[in-house]
Image (cartoon, rainbow, N blue to C red; front, side, top):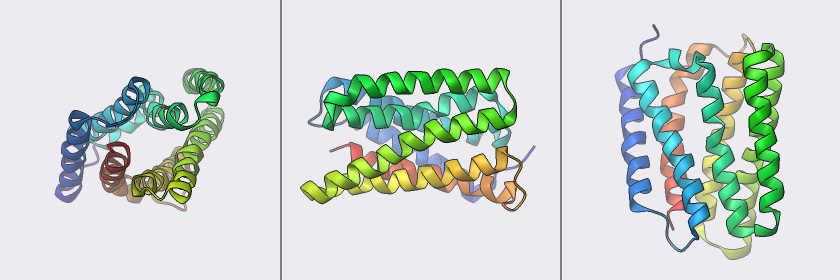
Length: 199
């Protein structure tokens, strides 16, 4: 069992506390559908932190964890599309449904390469939307909260890329280094997604 050190346990605990605060505090001045979607995204982020804290990095080997984790970028990006580009909501929803089915299918029936490609593609699209859409809104409207979301998207992208390399068996990035960075990345996500989505 890979032991999580005390510093990373502290990061995970803070990610849980901060994420829970923003979920309980709610999201202001937005309609109910984005509220539900943002709550799902942050809620799964909290759950991921809790599972890592309780069970260590071995939990990442569970096939279900990969599937459920896809709901973090999927739900947050879908909430942003609904709130700011509503005319594309149903098209993007269908795309994400196809993506989720693809991730589930390849994860349980196909080899590692097919699963990795599916996760990388659909996570990548969702991540790009979370990064570029708020950044565009920040440039257009000057609201700092949008920039916080883009910062979170940058780090979720970094974390996703690192995990994809590990799952693909790439040796140039030590798995232990990636696993040691995850708690800090989860804390950063909780802080910046919470700040960006809560106003």
